[in-house]
Length: 146
Image (cartoon, rainbow, N blue to C red; front, side, top):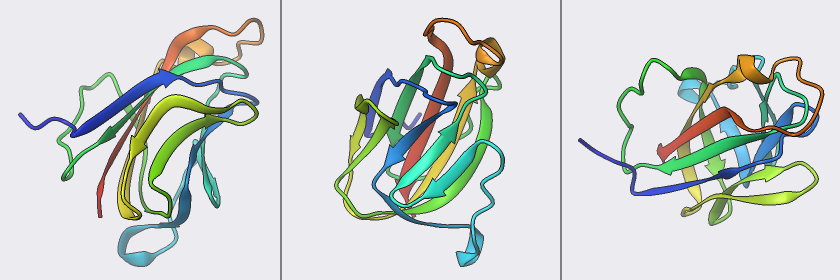
C-alpha cells in the first residue's frame, strides 16, 4: 500500500476559529475555474485559512506529501475540500494566526499541487469557550503534484 513520501504533524493554535496554511499563491477549481471553498476554507494569498467551529484550541494537524493522488481515508474523517494550489515557496507550513509556524511543515518545490483537507473531532470543540484543549479536533492535509 502506498504511503506518503513526507509527513509532519504538530499542534497548531486555532485562534478566532482558524489557522492558516502558508505559501499558497493562487487557487484553482476544476479546469481552472475559481475554487468552491465552502464554509470551512477561505483564501487570501499567501494564506489558505482552515476554519474550525471551536474558538481557541490546539488541534493536531498532519501534513502529508504524496507522489501521486492518495487513496481514500477511513470513514472517521470528513473531507472539507479539495483544491488546486500554486505554492511559491519551498516550505508549506501550518501557522497560528498570531503565533507563527508550527511543527507541521513540508519541504516542497514551487509549483502546482492538489490539496485535500480532512477533519475529525469538530463536534468536540464546537461552542467551547474555556481553556485551550489539545488534540480534540484533528486535521489531515494531503498534498500531491498537480
